[in-house]
View 1 (cartoon, rainbow over the protein chains, first blue to last red):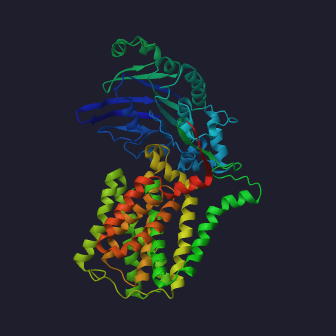
View 2: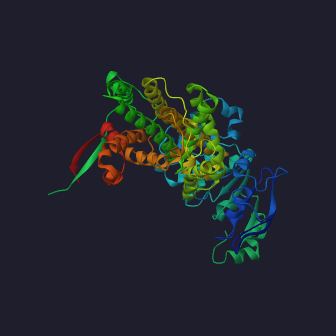
View 3: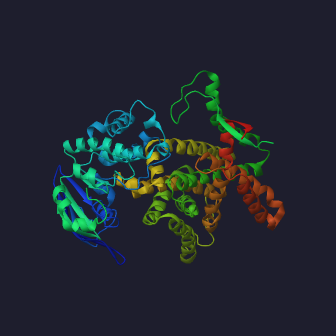
Length: 246
Length: 335
């Protein structure tokens, strides 16, 4: 579904991504892990067009999408969430979804084209765990607790009906309970055929979900394999030295 | 002695939200209608009560600057494109109308709509390459555009060169001249405010907030920025075309810094991000500037001083001040 070939990106003297290759098949969940500054977000930015690679290619469904503008990549169905979520604070939560629903991709779906847009927005919010009959979906985004802001970001991505969803540290800043309530939502999306790429710090939860894990360190891929293999990998243990892998 | 603080409470109007009104009786209907109907009524009556043609001229200047300021407020405070070169839009509109009128003898009610469209198209085409540049750099580049155009006209002697185009058709009578602007101001202010509440407006406001998230939502941010520039420059070009016909002349002064800076000053005085505030600001600054004429060369100094004082005392702008007084009850309570 997504194939990354020899991606390299330098920022000045720093090699943020060095010759990284991996592939994720349709319906799979790929985890990307690594210590801080290992280039995880750079890889997400490279795939989604927010930064252009110095060399290497990105393929989606066999088509070369390298260095296409971000909105075109999103329009193809490769949709990302942001690590530092900045919703449209002045707008009520459900009105935040006006923006993705206004995109050409969302408008191309029959079920989004008809029917009340506010209802569609509320349906999407309900899907990610907003209580529909509560005042929460109607609150301005600025008044939402952090957990709901993360959910709102997920709903924003889902409004594009993605084929590949790339979550950049979706779980960061969330409590155990909040993560526990998000996991079944992601599992269900995956069961319905959504391909997931999860960039995560929270390894325990990620390993429950992931079919395959790619480990980055200093911009290089140091390991790739099933979660149970990764846990045993010597290089990975070294990279996470001091931190418990699982 | 205990300290006092000001408490503000929203007036108890039922179910007041952004777009839903549950109205209960004529009192509430008039409460909502008054701030809309009153300014329209005043505008419509003004040309009938001004004592002479001089004041009618001042009114027309205030009206045209009000429209110009509204278009600047829209682009800067809602879409986040702080243009320091509104004179470009204004000047292109003026020159287009002037050229069509003087060189092709087209009637006034053809040249103005034509100049509005052509002016917006040329302006958008010129600004488009700079849309990728963000923040203050965008502002600086736009600042240079009108100056560049003026030097170009000066150097190549096209469009009348330094002399300008003089035989531009005038308006048939003062009533048409004033009421055209009054209706335009009403359409622009209410139209823009309506637009900003629609989906397109929400997308434009979101681009100002966080363009990366809008881009990640599958929306071509530059395209929508260009649409916003088109809307704003169409309005400014319209005012330019109007002014060209009003003075029966187009020349280099149309590209003066004044037309770039005044809309900003008016918006600051009137209140940012309200469209109506920008218009109110123009109605304060234009008469003020006229009233200070007797001070001769000191005029600009006094004008600037008053402007600074105003910003220091009422930084929120007049619109927000009036809005608060109208919609909220204030009282002093013990802190």
